[in-house]
Length: 361
Image (tube, rainbow, N blue to C red; front, side, top):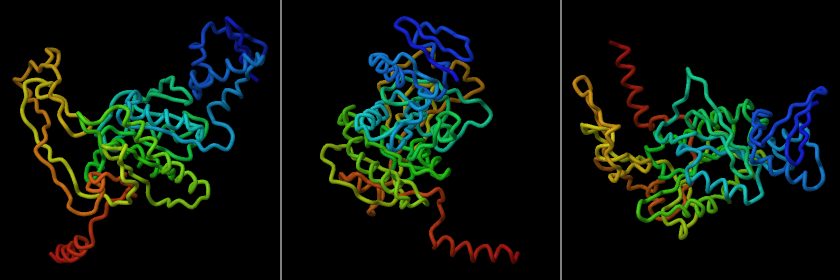
């Protein structure tokens, strides 16, 4: 049995009579891959202050696996682990004292990577200090992060619910197909775990970072309600939820059950001389034209290469009562999604007759 012996100026790990001194809190990263240092550091110091000088390895494992009857949620996203959306969501979850919180999110922005996965390379998971959580930044896509986080290879237990978000920008209509945020939730669904994707309809010049906190608070009843159904084993297991929060979240009109529509931004391409020419395409499907041109990004070898940059050409908008229109009306839209995308019945009927004709040729 291993023990962590904590003293005022040094820390000792004893096992089998042998003692290894660790001279700072950071050295303890190597003790357990399941433990975020910031999370159990506070618990360790609290126990020292109470006169408890010894903490066993098993007690550290209990810190990472949660305690009591609180449900465990795992949070991921596609904007990266340092993005304001996920940080606001984590703050609200932790400060509610209702959940054990795991975090397994990309170490950098992975917007619009859809459901891509890392296949031939190893993934690297780095502990990150986020108060009240056990958190890792992962060198993969949102789907990778969810897959790793629910596998019990990284954490000691499987979460009751996976939450992906909060994304900077809405995910409605056909944009859902491109979304790494939605993919993070879909990956959990494919593995039999309940999940929600959350996206805030960020608008430059109107939205502020504080809106992410308001969005997280507005979605808390949905999260708690779904966890209640999970506990009772009454939640539908043939879908997951995609939630979009309106720009004016402080004055939202309530929750609205919707269907995925066909809204999408029409994209085009134009030839450029450098990677930064024309600005950066943001996750909100808008262009940041203030990006400075840098000599480092200039493509000098254009004799054998052509460079192209995406640009917004227009949009396709539904006129029906779907996710995008309800979001624009100020509702928090809740859309149940599945993994399959079957064609409509009219198309099925057409190709049923068509295929019979092809077979006769």
